[in-house]
Image (cartoon, helix red, strand yellow):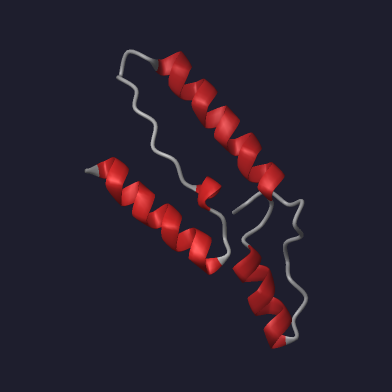
Length: 76
C-alpha cells in the first residue's frame, strides 16, 4: 500500500515539474541502523545535487522577489 502511495506522489511531482526522484520508499528493519544511515546519506546527497524546489524559485520570480535559495543550496 505504501509503495502505491509513493508512486502516486511521484507521478504528481513529475506533473508539477518538481521531479519524482525527490521521493522514495525504502524498507529496512530496526536492526539495520547502518543501512538506514547509508540510505539517508545517499538520499541527502541526491537531494543536494537536484537542488531547490523549482516551484519555490518560480514563485519568488513571479512575485519579483529574489529567492533566498539557489539551485545549489541544500533543501530546507
